[in-house]
Amino acid sequence: MTVVNHLPNAKLQYTPMTGSAPDEPAERKLLPEPLQSIMEAVEPLYGVDETLAFGIVHVYGMIVLTSFDYLDKQKLGVIRDLNDHEREIHVFLGDLAAGLAAAASAAIAHRNKTVST
Image (cartoon, rainbow, N blue to C red; front, side, top):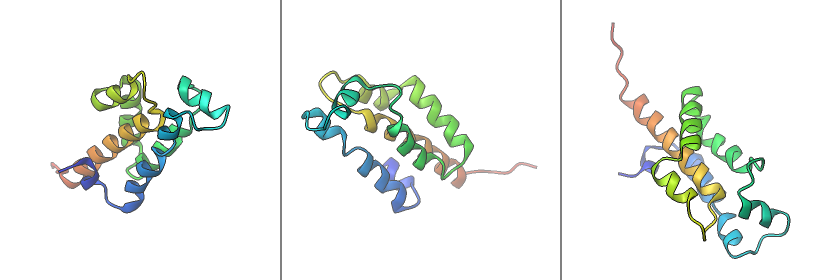
């Protein structure tokens, strides 16, 4: 079972497909300037990548935003691997992976929640 299986609708699945699209032409140096330089430098003030990821996390509320922020800052696992490539550009893909992971964990938690009294 993949992370995508835990996402409830196509909108959440389309966001990473669309959002990761700019990374590939950036790797081939096909983007217009200054966007090409911004993508290569992984400019911290760019923010468009986080904006797309927020579209994923807001479906589940503030707890997912907290999880996303943690994953985005800590760069764990696959997110770290995407971030640490020297020859590849993953400006969008790293944030989208963090958003998907946060959303999927919330979806699983919502499905498996128990109420104790």
